[in-house]
Image 1 (tube, helix red, strand yellow):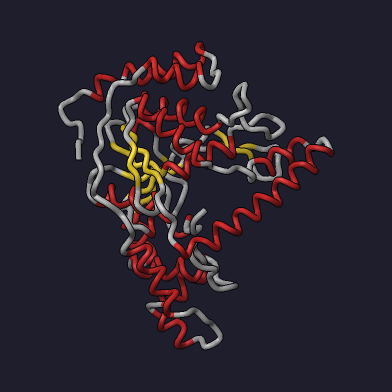
Image 2 (tube, one colour; image 1 turned 135 degrees about the vertical axis):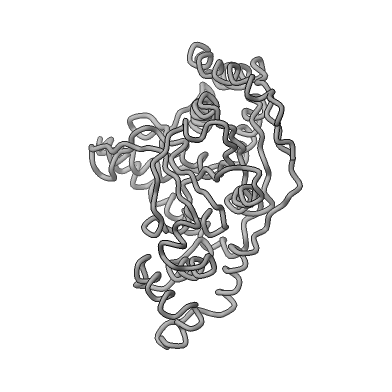
Amino acid sequence: MGVDLGDLFPKTPITFQDLSGRIIAIDAHNVLHQFLAIIRQRDGTPLKDANGNITSHLSGLFFRTSNLVEAGIRPIYVYDGQPHPLKARTIQERRKRKEQAEKDYQTALAAGDLVTAKSKASQTSRLTDDMITESKELLLALGIPTVQAPGEGEAQASHIVQQNKAYAVGSQDFDCLLFGTPLLARNLTSSERRRLPGKQAFVKVVPELLRLDQGLKQNDITREQLVDIAILLGTDFNDGVKGYGPKKSLTAIKEHGSLEHLLENNTDLSLPQTEIDSIRSIFLQPNVTDDYTVRWTPPDTDKVMQILSEEHQFTPTRITPALEKFQKAEYLLKQKNLFDF
């Protein structure tokens, strides 16, 4: 999802303790997709309750948010609104990839190849409206605030950080840097290790922090030029230019200054000016709102148990230790600055 700008930005390893006391605006759809993809059984089947309802998203949201709260981090979950019309092509392509992954999954499963089956299954995840509603209800019961974006959740989360109402955006998506977040915190809701694609080997996963100003300074570019680089690479809103990777795009924009000057000096390249202008506007003048209120409250223990245990058959003995992390954080949630805005 989003533009792969990782090679252009230095990454600083951090710990949860480094973020203690900080407000983090988490890209809700990004992490929910992550939970649906990763939290699965050995054969790739997602977690389900007795009625066959998928619960991977609720499991990830509950247990991994409890770790954030235990560390003193104050999360805000920011949800996507209406997608931009230019994203329709990307959405359709993702749907086709999921359909193919589903076929590949069934083939691997029939062949008894559980490694491939699980890998393909993770690509079939679909975040439904019901899942979004369930996740919001769970967060409300836990006392964790949510914000509804009018457009892209990454844009709204980035806006919250730009307004100094949160410290960083929590997301795997580098697009947050294009939307102007000063700080991007990655791997906050990931497991501590990740399997390498197609292998049985694992790598350790640690939280990391990317700074927009540091990356721009290191590459000697402006944010506007960073957006032009992304347009060359291809975004969720355009295909990009064939043959242009991160380093080549960076070199081209630094040499010519802008996409317009690059196109003037390379007549074999073609990008409609209307497309360039539209995508620049999406990232540089995003659809965001200041009409929201944020408040952390003590968890409603009975409601949490109802949602997880009674409705979805989570084992109470597994819920209780994680729920206690929210209860013990109550002293944080009732301090003098509740950041109501």
